[in-house]
Image 1 (tube, rainbow, N blue to C red):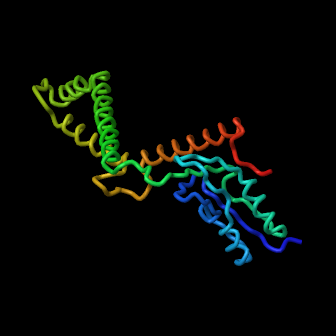
Image 2: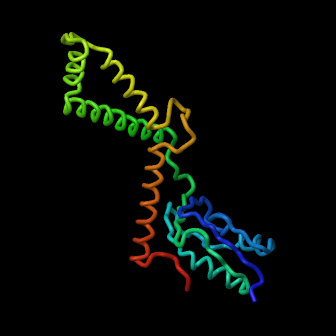
Image 3: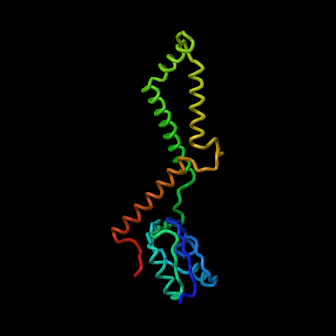
Length: 210
Protein backbone atom coordinates (compact mmCIF):
# COMPACT_ATOMS: atom_id res chain seq x y z
CA UNK A 1 0.00 0.00 0.00
CA UNK A 2 1.28 3.43 -0.95
CA UNK A 3 2.01 5.65 2.03
CA UNK A 4 1.90 8.99 0.19
CA UNK A 5 1.59 10.63 -3.23
CA UNK A 6 4.30 12.98 -4.48
CA UNK A 7 3.77 15.30 -7.45
CA UNK A 8 6.56 16.63 -9.65
CA UNK A 9 6.29 19.58 -12.00
CA UNK A 10 9.76 20.25 -13.39
CA UNK A 11 10.66 23.03 -15.82
CA UNK A 12 11.89 22.16 -19.30
CA UNK A 13 15.04 24.24 -18.83
CA UNK A 14 16.65 25.49 -15.61
CA UNK A 15 19.75 27.62 -15.06
CA UNK A 16 21.98 26.39 -12.23
CA UNK A 17 24.90 28.31 -10.71
CA UNK A 18 25.99 25.73 -8.11
CA UNK A 19 27.74 22.46 -8.89
CA UNK A 20 25.46 20.52 -6.57
CA UNK A 21 22.03 20.16 -8.18
CA UNK A 22 19.17 19.49 -5.78
CA UNK A 23 15.64 18.52 -6.74
CA UNK A 24 14.32 21.74 -5.20
CA UNK A 25 16.17 23.67 -7.93
CA UNK A 26 14.28 22.05 -10.79
CA UNK A 27 10.65 22.98 -10.23
CA UNK A 28 7.66 22.36 -7.98
CA UNK A 29 7.51 19.36 -5.63
CA UNK A 30 4.36 18.66 -3.64
CA UNK A 31 3.52 15.73 -1.37
CA UNK A 32 0.66 14.83 0.95
CA UNK A 33 3.33 14.10 3.57
CA UNK A 34 5.23 17.33 4.25
CA UNK A 35 8.15 15.52 5.85
CA UNK A 36 8.68 13.45 2.70
CA UNK A 37 8.24 16.57 0.58
CA UNK A 38 10.98 18.44 2.47
CA UNK A 39 13.37 15.47 2.27
CA UNK A 40 12.77 15.02 -1.47
CA UNK A 41 13.48 18.70 -2.09
CA UNK A 42 16.87 18.31 -0.38
CA UNK A 43 17.85 15.23 -2.39
CA UNK A 44 20.98 15.60 -4.53
CA UNK A 45 20.33 14.79 -8.18
CA UNK A 46 23.73 15.43 -9.72
CA UNK A 47 27.14 16.94 -9.03
CA UNK A 48 28.67 18.90 -11.88
CA UNK A 49 32.30 18.04 -12.61
CA UNK A 50 32.77 20.34 -15.62
CA UNK A 51 34.73 23.56 -15.19
CA UNK A 52 33.04 25.31 -18.10
CA UNK A 53 29.36 26.14 -18.63
CA UNK A 54 27.60 22.97 -19.78
CA UNK A 55 24.13 21.68 -20.63
CA UNK A 56 22.90 18.40 -19.13
CA UNK A 57 19.87 16.50 -20.43
CA UNK A 58 17.97 14.44 -17.83
CA UNK A 59 15.07 12.02 -18.08
CA UNK A 60 12.32 12.28 -15.48
CA UNK A 61 12.86 8.53 -14.96
CA UNK A 62 16.19 9.35 -13.29
CA UNK A 63 14.37 11.56 -10.77
CA UNK A 64 11.66 8.97 -10.13
CA UNK A 65 14.28 6.24 -9.67
CA UNK A 66 16.12 8.39 -7.15
CA UNK A 67 12.96 9.13 -5.15
CA UNK A 68 11.68 5.54 -5.15
CA UNK A 69 15.02 4.25 -3.88
CA UNK A 70 14.74 6.59 -0.91
CA UNK A 71 10.97 6.22 -0.40
CA UNK A 72 9.77 2.88 -1.85
CA UNK A 73 6.20 3.39 -0.63
CA UNK A 74 5.69 6.79 -2.29
CA UNK A 75 3.65 7.10 -5.49
CA UNK A 76 5.42 9.59 -7.79
CA UNK A 77 3.21 11.45 -10.27
CA UNK A 78 4.89 13.55 -12.97
CA UNK A 79 2.92 16.61 -14.08
CA UNK A 80 5.77 18.32 -15.88
CA UNK A 81 8.34 17.52 -18.54
CA UNK A 82 9.41 13.98 -19.46
CA UNK A 83 12.90 15.24 -20.25
CA UNK A 84 14.50 18.44 -19.01
CA UNK A 85 17.64 20.52 -19.47
CA UNK A 86 19.95 21.84 -16.78
CA UNK A 87 22.12 24.76 -17.88
CA UNK A 88 25.14 24.89 -15.60
CA UNK A 89 26.63 28.40 -15.65
CA UNK A 90 30.23 28.45 -14.48
CA UNK A 91 31.21 31.26 -12.05
CA UNK A 92 32.56 34.39 -13.70
CA UNK A 93 31.48 33.32 -17.17
CA UNK A 94 28.67 35.82 -17.59
CA UNK A 95 29.36 38.34 -20.37
CA UNK A 96 29.88 41.96 -19.25
CA UNK A 97 26.89 44.31 -19.20
CA UNK A 98 28.43 46.50 -21.91
CA UNK A 99 28.52 43.56 -24.32
CA UNK A 100 24.85 42.80 -23.55
CA UNK A 101 23.93 46.39 -24.43
CA UNK A 102 25.96 46.22 -27.66
CA UNK A 103 24.15 43.03 -28.73
CA UNK A 104 20.75 44.52 -27.83
CA UNK A 105 21.53 47.68 -29.83
CA UNK A 106 22.71 45.61 -32.81
CA UNK A 107 19.55 43.48 -32.83
CA UNK A 108 17.43 46.62 -32.42
CA UNK A 109 19.11 48.25 -35.43
CA UNK A 110 18.56 45.14 -37.57
CA UNK A 111 14.88 45.03 -36.59
CA UNK A 112 14.42 48.76 -37.19
CA UNK A 113 16.13 49.00 -40.58
CA UNK A 114 14.78 45.62 -41.68
CA UNK A 115 11.22 46.71 -40.92
CA UNK A 116 11.74 50.06 -42.62
CA UNK A 117 13.15 48.36 -45.72
CA UNK A 118 10.21 45.91 -45.82
CA UNK A 119 7.67 48.73 -45.56
CA UNK A 120 9.38 50.76 -48.29
CA UNK A 121 9.67 47.83 -50.71
CA UNK A 122 6.00 46.94 -50.07
CA UNK A 123 4.93 50.51 -50.79
CA UNK A 124 6.99 50.62 -53.98
CA UNK A 125 5.79 47.20 -55.19
CA UNK A 126 2.08 48.06 -54.91
CA UNK A 127 2.66 51.71 -55.94
CA UNK A 128 0.98 53.22 -52.90
CA UNK A 129 1.74 56.75 -54.09
CA UNK A 130 -0.08 56.08 -57.40
CA UNK A 131 -3.07 54.68 -55.48
CA UNK A 132 -3.25 57.83 -53.34
CA UNK A 133 -2.99 60.01 -56.46
CA UNK A 134 -5.92 58.16 -58.07
CA UNK A 135 -8.02 58.36 -54.89
CA UNK A 136 -7.31 62.10 -54.66
CA UNK A 137 -8.30 62.60 -58.31
CA UNK A 138 -11.53 60.60 -57.89
CA UNK A 139 -12.55 62.54 -54.80
CA UNK A 140 -11.46 66.09 -55.77
CA UNK A 141 -11.43 65.91 -59.56
CA UNK A 142 -7.93 67.40 -59.74
CA UNK A 143 -4.45 65.92 -59.71
CA UNK A 144 -2.38 65.86 -56.53
CA UNK A 145 0.55 68.25 -56.43
CA UNK A 146 2.08 67.00 -53.18
CA UNK A 147 1.28 65.35 -49.89
CA UNK A 148 -2.41 64.76 -49.22
CA UNK A 149 -4.60 63.98 -46.21
CA UNK A 150 -4.76 60.35 -47.35
CA UNK A 151 -0.97 60.01 -47.25
CA UNK A 152 -0.79 61.72 -43.86
CA UNK A 153 -3.47 59.39 -42.49
CA UNK A 154 -1.59 56.40 -43.93
CA UNK A 155 1.64 57.43 -42.17
CA UNK A 156 -0.10 58.03 -38.84
CA UNK A 157 -2.10 54.80 -39.15
CA UNK A 158 1.03 52.82 -39.98
CA UNK A 159 2.79 54.09 -36.83
CA UNK A 160 -0.25 53.38 -34.63
CA UNK A 161 -0.65 49.94 -36.20
CA UNK A 162 2.97 49.03 -35.40
CA UNK A 163 2.60 50.18 -31.78
CA UNK A 164 -0.65 48.24 -31.32
CA UNK A 165 0.73 45.10 -33.00
CA UNK A 166 3.95 45.02 -30.99
CA UNK A 167 2.04 46.02 -27.83
CA UNK A 168 4.72 48.43 -26.67
CA UNK A 169 5.07 52.17 -26.28
CA UNK A 170 8.37 53.16 -24.69
CA UNK A 171 8.79 50.79 -21.71
CA UNK A 172 5.08 50.36 -21.10
CA UNK A 173 2.81 47.70 -22.53
CA UNK A 174 -0.49 48.76 -24.08
CA UNK A 175 -2.06 45.49 -22.93
CA UNK A 176 -1.03 42.83 -20.43
CA UNK A 177 -0.90 40.14 -23.12
CA UNK A 178 2.56 38.98 -24.26
CA UNK A 179 3.86 40.78 -27.32
CA UNK A 180 4.35 38.97 -30.68
CA UNK A 181 8.11 39.19 -30.14
CA UNK A 182 7.81 37.55 -26.72
CA UNK A 183 5.65 34.78 -28.19
CA UNK A 184 8.17 34.13 -30.96
CA UNK A 185 11.05 34.13 -28.48
CA UNK A 186 9.25 31.58 -26.27
CA UNK A 187 8.50 29.42 -29.33
CA UNK A 188 12.15 29.66 -30.39
CA UNK A 189 13.32 28.73 -26.88
CA UNK A 190 10.98 25.70 -26.81
CA UNK A 191 12.18 24.56 -30.25
CA UNK A 192 15.82 24.83 -29.15
CA UNK A 193 15.14 22.83 -25.98
CA UNK A 194 13.25 20.14 -27.90
CA UNK A 195 16.13 19.85 -30.39
CA UNK A 196 18.72 19.54 -27.58
CA UNK A 197 16.67 16.83 -25.86
CA UNK A 198 16.15 14.80 -29.05
CA UNK A 199 19.83 15.08 -30.04
CA UNK A 200 20.92 13.94 -26.56
CA UNK A 201 18.56 10.96 -26.75
CA UNK A 202 19.81 9.93 -30.19
CA UNK A 203 23.44 10.27 -29.15
CA UNK A 204 22.86 8.46 -25.85
CA UNK A 205 23.95 11.46 -23.79
CA UNK A 206 20.70 11.84 -21.85
CA UNK A 207 21.06 10.98 -18.14
CA UNK A 208 18.39 8.33 -17.60
CA UNK A 209 17.44 5.76 -14.99
CA UNK A 210 19.50 2.62 -14.55
